[in-house]
Length: 500
Ligand code: AHR
Image (tube, rainbow, N blue to C red; front, side, top):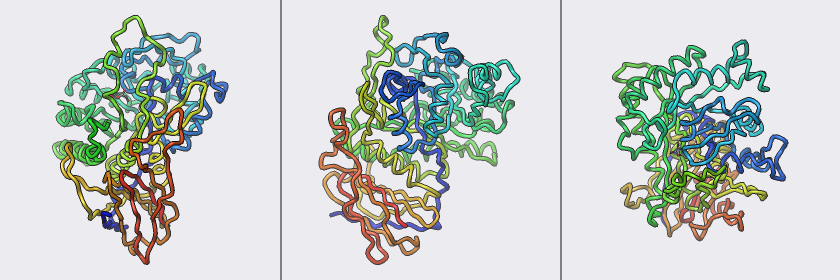
């Protein structure tokens, strides 16, 4: 058995854990909205067409905020299409996902779904094919109490109180060649600054998110952030990061180390933002909105999605992967990376939520169920409270093809009111690791809860036929011996402990 020793000092806080770290993302893509959260013919659907069983699972997952309505979809979206009497709403092509958008679910319906879920609405603006004026119109429609044509139109459409959307994402992945209205960093940076200034004339207290590069692997990465922030630093609060990981060519070792890559990605963006801060002698920092992250088997998305110009289906299935235990372990590790950077990552969204790249599956006319990736999210959202603590890990490493040497044990911890939550991953594929931790300084001595996601087959997954094949089990060995906690982590596993 391998061994690792942790050190945890309650005075070594990284920063407060924002509840907004446990956000998710719902896009008009595939069966995410139609046939996902909304399915009027389903036995559990309410009069509004939203599935009650799906709402219950989203609540169980502990989702605190939802970014909407895209994603790539937003760059072709006219928000006016999505409000007003449903039978008069235009039906449009969804160019991002080669499908037909009926606009049956729009701003009002989605906000009322969020009320049932108990999560906050985060809106993304179209800065691809639209500009500042349309952004201002949507802000006025959504947030101004009454007395203007647009605010009164919202009231006439059935919403007397403003939606009061606090956080706005200014565009989506604007450096992506796949993006409708792709822009250069110069053009986007100026547009983001202009739009933010205009929005702040309506409400200076809004939280505004500038688009970072679409990913750390983009040729634009780094220079994009520097240029955009050079133009828009004083006008924005956050800059976005997006990252998706998948197991490629059977390289499970590299895949399990995805959290290491996320750490480096976050630290690069922080360094770039702080460079611009230094150049501008600015007293304020720009934080990160990691508003798309997950395991996504992007290599399985058909490349000919957009080829058939005679076929524009409504809500075709896209990216409905069965997630394995290894995928769930990586999701746990990505959440740990977010916690480790709680001082600068103050908002995040798992992408996405239902059916599409999703922790929740919703069968047509059938049940809704949890994929492996559901479990680490739900438990981390419930237990990670208060402040994030620095964790020292003294243990073995291994060499990966993609990221060089990485630690076998990944760890993160939070503390609040005499409680400590500890999150652990064993990346070893064949060996257990015994983790020990001296609890003296922490003032905790009881393991109140200990759960593990693991399986003899790391590629086992929940499926329609066996929706409960994988899930959380009580951790087999988690004991306090004197002042020392000892936990045994099975190979390819994620574990959470609540210590009181
Ligand atoms: O989440 C799926 C897609 O991934 C989003 O639409 C886009 O922003 C990203 O490339």
